[in-house]
Image 1: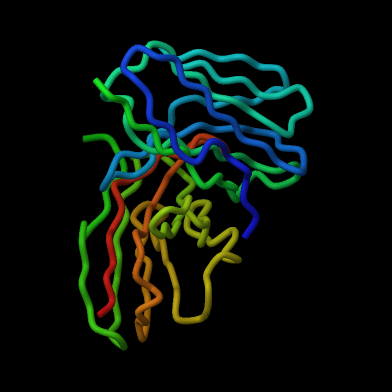
Image 2: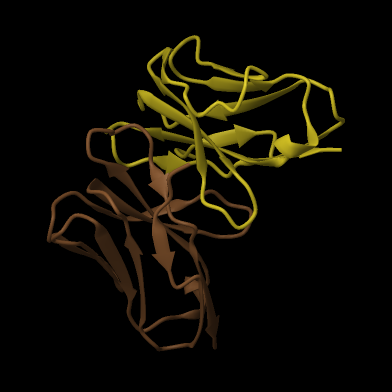
Length: 112
Length: 112
């Protein structure tokens, strides 16, 4: 099925570093969601974005809905070991508010 | 706990058998979703319920898959004549709005 282009695929960073990951689409999206998934768990919603240009923070996390409505990024500042996990972007395309379309995930490893 | 719960957490079955996977959504959430997730992939949409009715079942891979939500709360995903390719983590999510979906921990299905 349709997927978002999410990058990077994986990251290995030192504790305290900032992290940035992004998602792009060839078509317009109305909503962008960022999830984190730990092994053996379901995805946990981190941030939801609803308007083009919207910049939203949740603690050390900041996400933006791109102006073109075809991209979004997630930044994590001052990473800590518990940030380890897989981060997924997901969104609803224009005219479809039922099926979430997902990226393939960014696997984050943090070296303490 | 107020989150989405899924049972069983793990299910091992033999090829050709029938299985049922259960999802208890967050109380009051009218929308319920089933997804399937393979290793290294994002969740793949299967079916969406609004209340008791399946509003969109276009993600069900074939007629061996069926889901019900008879009272608009608990849902059961049913798989007949299981195949090895059905092995995956089956995730359930619920939501009040059409956007923010909250996931359960998933059921890991292994078909031998």
